Amino acid sequence: MSNQIKVPFHGSSLFIIEHNGEPYTPMKHIVEGMGMSWGTQARKLRSNPERWGVFIMNIPSIDLHNDSVCIPLRKLFGWLQSLQPNRVREDIRDKVIQYQNECDDVLWKYWTKQNETPVMPPSRMRMLMVMENGRVVSAQPVPEDSVVFRTEDIPKLLREPGYFSVSQLKDVADTALTQLAMCAEHAVSLRR
Image 1: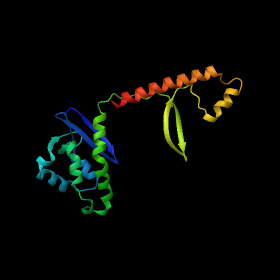
Image 2: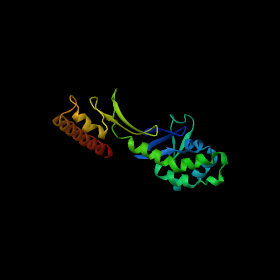
Image 3: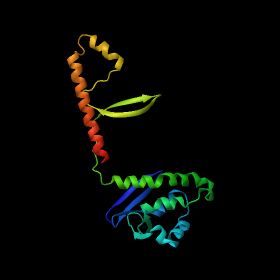
Image 4: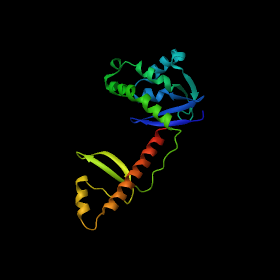
């Protein structure tokens, strides 16, 4: 076992364990996170180990005294969909549905992002935030020397002495286009 990832998920801690290069997840934390009985679900998994790809391993960092029943992450969606929300207690039904809708995707995202080189945020950053109806709808980093104008204010600023000459405005536009191209290249490289 060369890799273990702890994943926060709606108040629970879930885990991904690498086994033979493939992501597995210990099932007890998922079952108990939904509020279901581990004993019942453990029997279900152990009764059909080939179907679920069950692998039992000792993971001291997760449970010092007991072995963990794990299934491949690729099998988690199928197992979650085998649960019938209308047959569970009403007080946990919404949680079961939430896990069915989100759990496998969240774990997969953590697994696929683990090998990316982390980008360290600068200790200080200037941000441009766009707000609508009192809520931030977008935010982006901007250079320390950046200035924001409303489009309708630019002609007025050009007429005001001491603001910008046309050649300075051209320089501002060229710099903005260069910065935009660099941001686009950076965004493309992050998606690879």
